[in-house]
Image 1 (cartoon, rainbow, N blue to C red):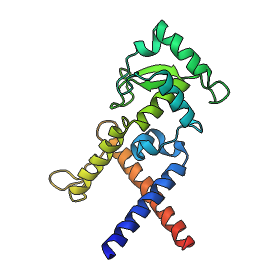
Image 2: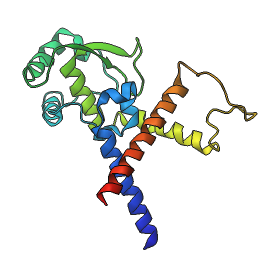
Image 3: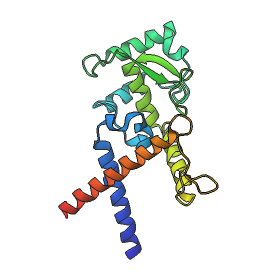
Image 4: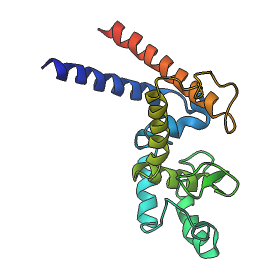
Length: 199
């Protein structure tokens, strides 16, 4: 019975952590939001359900893990996308503003992996990727890397001689990981404070 109580506390703590993380403004995560929170719990707009149902009603067979630019930009595709997009005029703010959309959802934002698309098209595809589990690879990949680092005896910044490595590898990945860890620690502290005051 005691073992289950500990498990229940852990699960409860994780749920509170997720709830807190989801209540933070997206700006606080920078570019790390999709890798910081399990994407199936992300809400990108107030009308995600409507966007998703309309999207899948109109684009049942559209492959969303790896997008074909022709399915978005060809004349025949534009004819199909236009009525879908216009349904959200007045519902989604700046629905027709341009934004970058990843072609392959298992990769990041690079010049080769992005296409310019209307904001509502971005929302529709990313909401579908989240709900259908395609964006989970990014989240689990980041979590898996963090677990590997932790299993190395906590020597995240140490080289094979046990010396701390200076600087960043590949464009600041260490700083991003440290920032994410700090955000998670702060969120956990905040959750613990709020749960102590309610008890």
